[in-house]
Image 1 (cartoon, rainbow, N blue to C red):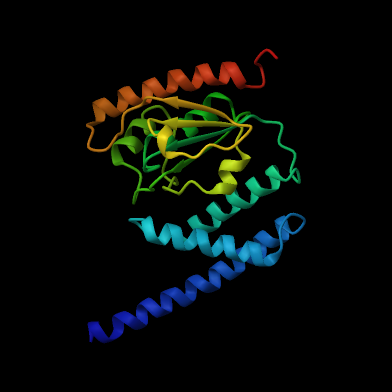
Image 2: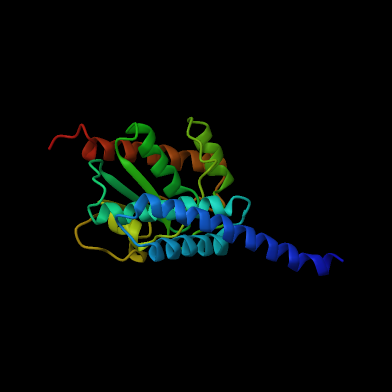
Length: 221
């Protein structure tokens, strides 16, 4: 019986997901109708869902994560096209899996700039989930990564960034004109014990604070 019912359960789940994604696309189109057409919104929502479905280890909140990722991508398109004015410096952190270092760095930027510097993260080859040690190390300094999820480096998010900081993966990221690229030699967290992850966190925090002093709203022109 289990073998007979499993495919139906999967089909039912997919149908429910399609329904949710359709509502998500309609909502996002209302928000970005002045920037993109409905076909583009539908495509980006579907692409976001399929990419996260391919890489995510935990799929409980897959449609919500896909909607969030699609929203980030559409907002990036709006910023790149000048439809949304963004006066905040925009930083994109990229690492191999977007499962620890880049998520930590982006969250630390938001914390130390009080949200006055925009920060996003992405991975060259997104992992399945955020490393548990990264979650624990960030919880220790009052920054929750509970709702973070690995996501790919999309062209639209890349295009909207002003500063692109690669974490020991500069040779894997194609460069775009007009952006400030920097590489921070921060080791991967994969397989590292909590104590080493804490050291990475502290190094990222020091570099992030230096970056904010350089590019933040209070930086000298």
